[in-house]
View (cartoon, rainbow, N blue to C red):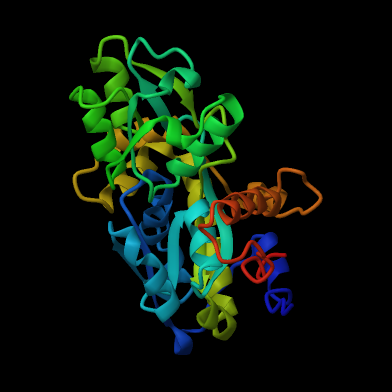
Length: 321
């Protein structure tokens, strides 16, 4: 296994400035959808962390996640941020990507909301439940179902909405008995629908919904210094967020359309962001809750479901393992 980052990784861990020389300034593209978990990258951009490192960063907000595997494999984007669950599935099914770092974890920002008459997961039998099977919350739902009930997905009238927001709206309009939803629809449903309650949230299963950054494999091999510099920019952005939250929320919201600082502040309550030390802990293979162990559980789960062509993740983690 080629561990080509070894020579430069200590500098990143020590917080040293990682730069690309002016003569080698890199035009780099990163993509992600509208979600607060990724938005500290806008802090990095606004604060000049990319520019300081000799990177001309173009952040593209791409909502159609079905294109992600092709974009990262073709190198149309060099960096991609999305949930760890789909990142693993994309890699396992042929996407040319490598894991860079963990960005955040949902700690209550996603949940299963039901009507008042549904008190346990077993009560979902025969009920209409809306969700988005392409979203990472689908893995959260199946994990909760497997660990907290006697049901399988087949025992429930599952309606794939193709969009998590739409699933939440379907619940709030009374079309379904339950829905897997995320913020801000989760809070809105609990506040506006009489008797609605969260049967289970990502706070109960904090290792099921993680967001991570990946990079195109060829690009990473050719430009390891850029990979390190992008990681360093993320860590500096998280430090800025922790030290200056109100100012940070404005920057985080500013990169998206129709998102306010208040929206970001609400989402942050259900998220845990991972900075440098958190990633060092997650990347410790001796930790039973390491990113490797958590990701292997995901890969094994989807391999068993017939959704992955492989559950071997060594190459996926080649940059950090």
